[in-house]
Image 1: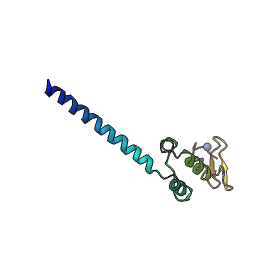
Image 2: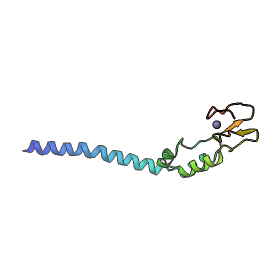
Image 3: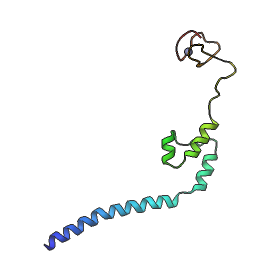
Image 4: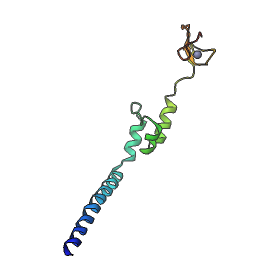
Length: 105
Ligand SMILES: [Zn+2]
């Protein structure tokens, strides 16, 4: 009987201890997060936010992702480009065939 109680106690300790350590680790990481440093980094032109919106949201960097994609949006049509008359995709004006639909521009 005593042995069973000791086993159950040990099992409970072995389940609870890693959980508490993990929660402590996670909260420690949150406490060490330096928002001012993140702000400075994200304002730097050479620093890119996470690659996609879901990852940026998970990291709490969605606003930076939005700002970055807004700043680096491709121009819709360069002055030397022409639009394909079939699919409306932009193509350089020296090509005869559309790169998107492969029909004659
Ligand atoms: Zn086309």
